Image 1: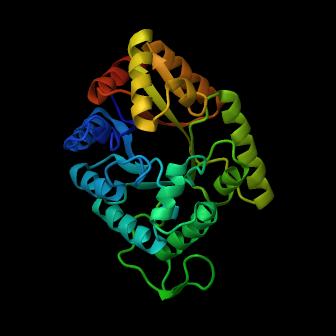
Image 2 (image 1 turned 180 degrees about the horizontal axis):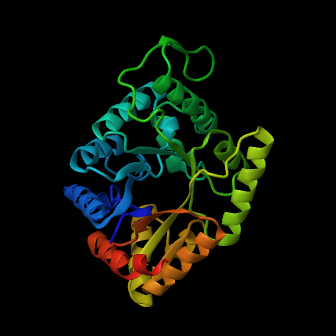
Image 3 (image 1 turned 135 degrees about the horizontal axis):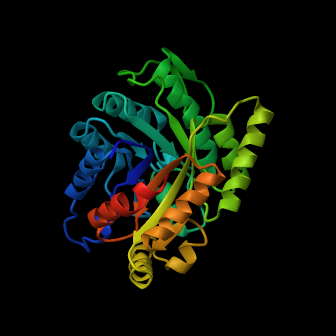
Length: 319
């Protein structure tokens, strides 16, 4: 099978902690999946982000390890909460990892949510009032791009004041592509239109996908920016088993991952649990709606088995 130029795999940086049940996590599963995905022909591998709200392996450290262990696949974040990190630190880390990988990094960024105390506490732990997260994110994106491409960078006002700063090393990519996540949030969709090199979403219906994209295009026109060619990436959670087993296993995964059942999660983000044909049909529907990139998360303790099933049963039938 040739390279799957529009398909990526989310690695279990949180899953290895969830299923360790207090023991030492199987960190090596992340390298094994990344190397397998590269060998099979997937275009990319991705890591998630959180610090305290959903404990996981630290994403920048994992990305550096992946960059050293792989040769072709792109390495992305889906998504990083950049308000939790100072942009100078983040710019330096990403530039370094982009050099290690020889220019294979995609920086996916998101503002996160404020609808749970654990998210409020996570931001407070690093000194960030959660109500500032969106404004910090937007300023940080501008600072990141300047630090990667300019000398003597100054940012006299705002959250991240800088004076005459030059950052080395520069990333291989000039600049590193930044894909922004948003569902049906007006400020988020405007942010994609204004600042995004790509869009990541996990909306649970094609109707909502279309509404979001139409709004991004509308905002782009208002801003005088052509967004027609930016990637439109769908983040999709999949479990490939017979219907009952898939729902049972997927529900267990969601409860362990988020602390809430599948019935609640599935109203907020796209989940496809069941036989392969169900996943094939869902991906084709979103392709018809305009999605042109797919980031697949396997909602299962059996990550490698699910990757094999998806590769054998789903990918060849996507057309």
